[in-house]
Amino acid sequence: MQSVDTIAAIATAQGRGGVGVIRLSGPQSKVIGSEISGKPPAARHATYCNFLDENGVVLDQGISLYFPAPHSYTGEEVFELQGHGGPAVLRMLLQRCLDLGARLAQPGEFTRRAFLNNKLDLAQAESVADLIEANTTEAARSAVRTLSGEFSAAVQGMIEELIFLRMLVEAMLDFPEEEVDIINLERRDALLNNTQVKLKHTLDTAKQGSLLREGAHVVIAGSPNVGKSSLLNRLSGEEVALVSDIPGTTRDVIRQAIQIRGVPMHIMDTAGLRESQDTVENMGIARTHQTLHHADLILLLLDASRGLTAQDEAILAGLPADIPRLLVFNKIDLIKNKEVLWAGSNPWVGVSAKTGEGLEELRGKLLEAVGWRDQESGTFMARERHLRSLALAQTHLNHAHTVLASAELFAEELRLAQRALNEITGEFTADDLLGEIFSSFCIGK
Image (cartoon, rainbow, N blue to C red; front, side, top):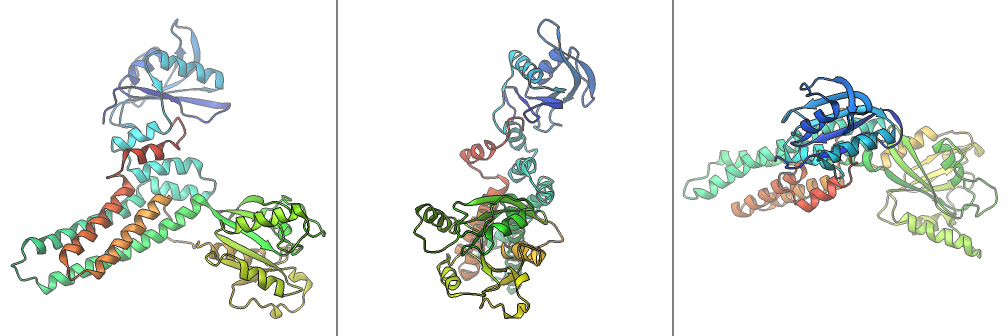
């Protein structure tokens, strides 16, 4: 796709910096860039020059870079003006580009043009935004793997296997009078099983990447004065919640973002669950119940010196049944024999928010409970739509197993599975979905 207009934007972050970049893309990029830099550029050479206004007055000094099509980020002519990172000078340079015929780029329009010009597939294009927004080292590495094409290669490999399998089945349909060789049937079944195994592995890996991108929402719940706020402070490494011996101190949900081995988690301290005559406290308890229903994991905090009480069992019974929970016995520094702790069939861990004992084991249990596991081959940065497409493809392949006796139905399930996988890389993607995806990008990308 060759664009008829030229776009321009500030490609560096807002605020002041040592360097600021104005990026142009489109058919007039070279002309506009040459007008501002005062000289025709050499391709892919950094040239130090003055940046001039319409009267030849110097606006700034810096480096000009020209990338001819199709050897550029967008696949079009791209010109970059790399000057000083002051907001005022960047605005002047951008306005100069607009005065010379460029228009202001829309959010994500540079990357969208790269996708439409086959420089990136859709999964790679999305990983550009994920890399920019990554808050942890693991998330950044995962985004780089997706940007480099590892995720797309895994998806494309499954698509190619499905195409070959469809060809085999279609041949059986086109020549029904021919006797179907038993070897062909065995080959069909082997190909189907192999694709299912690969799909399951890719889906599991993508779920890990989704966890890195979105983080896990962990709610700390329990009776008053069991140490919920103290545990939040200990996990976050700072005093983010007020701690008091007075029951009902926490009245609202307190949120804190933390990282455990590179995995982002959103920890929420909540009001103690009990019967109360205090109107404000009851409002906090109501918010606790609302928060529990949106959690990925519930930490039910218990007092180790009291064990699992009848009140705790009542709270446990009232937790959402479909949300995983981990029982945490706090104040283990107050008991001598930890073997007396009992949580029934529920997973549990003992800690001391006061001394820090058991915190490392708790962090490991947290990762395990939210579904994180270390993978030698690394993870892909995946979004919710990727997971839906992979799960849909998995459903169709499972259905295909049940209709092996009917070649027509089997072939249709394969087709639907392939279509679901194609949506990940953008081979078949609606324009409204593209608009939604790229609108979340920053202007300069």
